Image 1 (tube, one colour):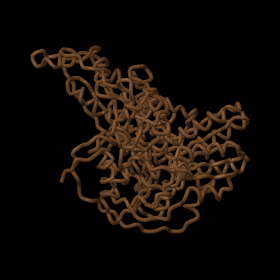
Image 2: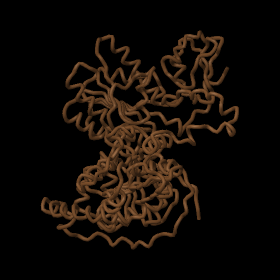
Image 3: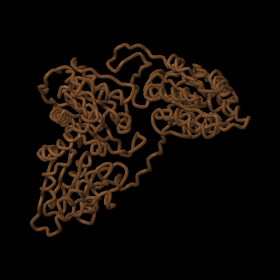
Image 4: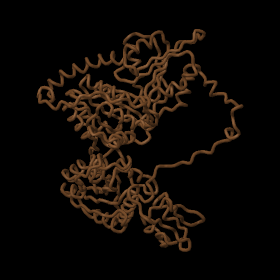
Length: 618
């Protein structure tokens, strides 16, 4: 049977086929759909959960793995930073059942803070890495990753990139693999309790295992060597090396050529035997990869170690861009330049006979669509309340600095709100505010954090602030979901990933138990209440917390949109200039509201000095 699957769906179904029993993770684009697909397919033998962060997810999966179950953890590349501590130690301790850590890298970056390359972590931690190039390949490769982990009794990394995660393909579904039931945990202090001597001995075993994997991966079917040789072509022998989705782009171009050798590398460690065969008699090699020159550096080292006189080109030589996402056109040009020194004739000379009049017409530029908060987003109301309160308080001469965090509310940095001065990583807004305030104690330091991020890494920051006597205001923007990654549940929602009811962990109760100086809970859409709460907090000292509550518009929409009374509107434009709501615009000298976008949050009614905005009456 074949199914049209997104790459993440293919990974999930491949894991089910491979006998996964335990799956955990934290939502992060482009990885989120993997666990959601697991739950949607509802296999009785699989337990899945959204953990509060990636560290907790990996540790829970490790527990399942040492009990003999095949387990999987999912996250995006920055999540691996959070999970790196237990992963490093787990690789030394080892596991009993196969364990795959799926880390989705995000070249571009399209929806991330960084472009970091997970293959570096595999090399650093001596952990095997599998690098799929298509959704079809990801489906079968995830089973190979589990089998490898089972064999070496250590975790492995599985590294799909955004285009593999989110592209679709027709995938042939295969029969389930025969996987034994978990044998259960067996007590053994000499194996599962990490002591220095155990770590030393296991490090030696890991090093030996890496050498064996180099040979094993040389016979792995997805590490592929292709050769086409034209006897009439006297140009120097050149080769192309690629991996991941870039391999697909390369093959689309190479089908037009008759004299090349190409190697696909889908694993780390480098498959040494097949690499040696590939490099034989070649003069030059072009490496095409995302994101960093990982394969390129490995090949340079390999050539040096084996005294192979081959020139390796790629990112380090300026033949490939050092940042950003690869695409078919970029790869086409790089290969054409490398093999021919010019563009392909098929692309350089447009066939005028097949060209239509429309094709010759210049295409208009695409409109610029900057990221912005949705119409009716409660975060806009919360930011606006803080901004207006600070304006009143600034008459006393105190500067305010706003530290932000990762989530939809990061968009609060855009004009006209301009309410985020710093943004580093999840949970860092609270702790960075503490450092800023120590250096400038007369400054009003605000830290904005979302409800899901509060549970992820926000709680330790508040504990640190209270314990060390900090003077900051923490604004928890609670919209009742993990909105930025698609609306996943978290500990306050009262639901688990499996759809079961769960005890609702109340943020107000948690914060109160941390002995903060004050905690207030306000309706984000009640502007006067929210502003007064901010003003009150600014008059106090210590760690003050304000919880701004308002549902995400993707979950709850108001029934009636607002409209502008053109007879009353003065055309001052303050509603547009102050809020930046995408439903508001000026036309014909008057304010207008796009009712298809408006959710009726009423924030614009508060701003309008002429009282020209009403709820669906005009």
